[in-house]
Image 1 (tube, rainbow, N blue to C red):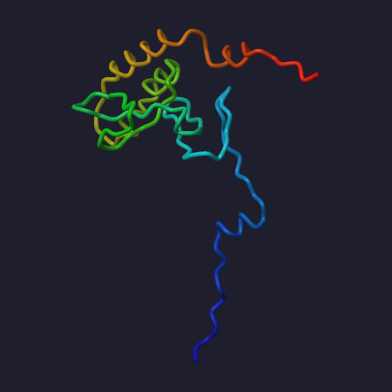
Image 2 (image 1 turned 180 degrees about the vertical axis):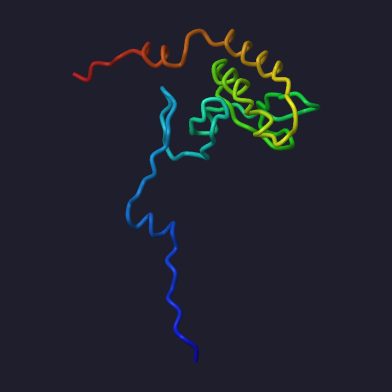
Length: 137
């Protein structure tokens, strides 16, 4: 018989037993719950639920919005916000996220965000504040 090996502890179970909850960087106005997968926006680098983000993929050298999340290939995640798109382009995050060489055209994503802006009047923060308050008494 050889020497007795010490059993290694499973790191995830150890964390659960200790009750450690890792902090998640939140974007202003987003409510974080553990109801789905968490993704990182390539523009602002904030981690949030994938339901709050827009998936984009590369098709023929151009970045295209994948609204149904069904297009093949490597995807990246972006807040549906002009500021995050501008930050991603400024930081050259698209070629890095898609692992391709050279610049990528993001005009179709910009058009998509422009259409979203026309459909929605006001920001989501305004809509939350505009809800009726019910007096509990």
